[in-house]
Amino acid sequence: MYNISEKTLERLKAEYPKGARGELISMDDPYNKKLHPGSKGTVKSVDDMGTINVRWDCGSSLGVVYGEDSCCIIEGDK
Image 1 (cartoon, helix red, strand yellow):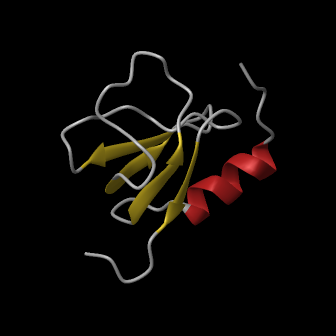
Image 2 (cartoon, one colour; image 1 turned 90 degrees about the horizontal axis):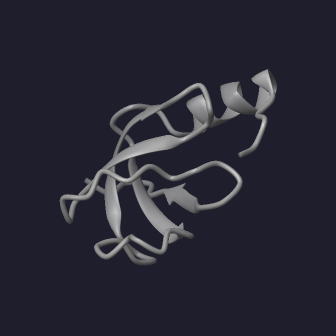
């Protein structure tokens, strides 16, 4: 588990606002069967640990864990 600084947490919350569309780049979860690089979803929130909570289009709700997984915001994607 990572200890996230307040500055980093503020940056993540600004970069991944609620309602933004995101795309998964990588996820290190051996139990994940639905998500793969390129999966898209809508950001629900960023929690106090820096996990980006996403409602994925495939129905999954796995969060993107800061320091382990990665995603990006998709500009102009609805």
